[in-house]
Image (cartoon, rainbow, N blue to C red; front, side):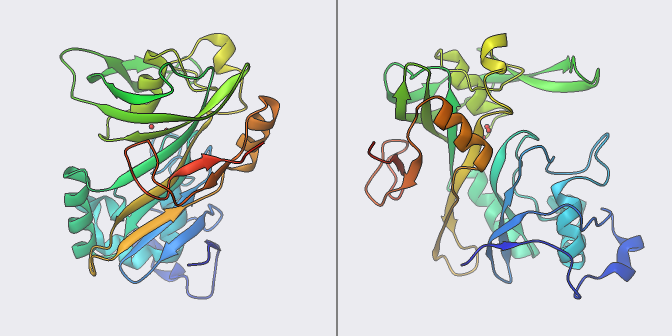
Amino acid sequence: MMAATLRRTDTLETHHMATYSVEPNPKVTCRIRYEDDTLLVVEKPARIVTQPGLGHDRSSLLNGLFARYGNRLQNLGAARDFGLLHRLDRETSGVLIVALDASAYDRLREDFELRRIRKFYWAIVKKAPDPASGVVRTALAEVKAVDRASDRPIKLARISRGGKPAVTAYRTLAASDLGALVECRPMTGRLHQVRVHMASIGSAVLGDDFYASGGVAEASPRLALHAHRVAFAHPRTGVPVDVATEMPKDLRGVLTRLRLAMPVRDEREGAAGGDEGEATTEAGDAE
């Protein structure tokens, strides 16, 4: 399905705004990569939080979605997260699944819990991992911390034997003396999983203020992590749905500066989890 941009239209239910739990904000826009009467796959831009929170009551992705789909999301209610099946960090861009009815949400939630949903990330890292492809199996625990920039309480992830199991498959797509492009497939959905796992093997994600050293954290204008693909069975029909995006413009600039090839879609079998249709490179951020 052709991608569309979410923006104000004459179908907005603006007269019902006062009854919504989330305030609609048509100024928050995103790309709609897939849409039918049961679900959406949207592409969240970087620097937008997924859902409202402290300091982001009106500026989240969900505020923007309520401007167009408010009635349907409100019907799902807080118990079903107003349709959100998963989240991305503020600095991470990429695709997210949003349910539009209760049966779709319940089925997709079950699929997430059973690890049937396949998510793929592109990460630009400080150096190629060794080995070039593999699987990281390191338990992670959430810890409370304070954001040094905002002085607000936050949660971070730490490697811990007492943490929850976390598994990330990865493969190197391109490498130079300046950095590397890696595709990651988180098999579990822990907080900051891709970021912590890549840092743990010496390949921290560029632009990561929490898990990378100063030089690496400053090597990208933002966190160099993009959720480029999601694949799942349609909750109503069972037909495979596979939605992929291109590398965002700001991260393409990072690749060029590091002399790394741009990733492209490829229909052959890949290494990051053994799936078809994964990414390769042109010849010549659960994140």
